[in-house]
Length: 47
Image (cartoon, rainbow, N blue to C red):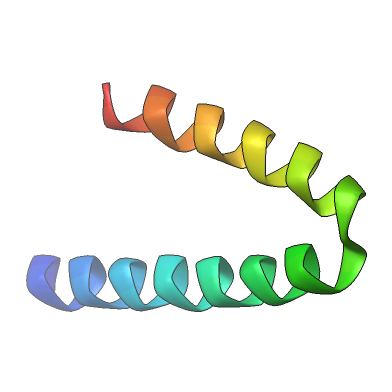
């Protein structure tokens, strides 16, 4: 069960990252601000 949960979590994060990247690419300058915020959040999650 744990391995399946981790795998699904990784897949979910990967999909969310791809979707956010697409949105950032389409939104332009506003997307850059959003990407900066998400990078900060991911760094906090890692630590």
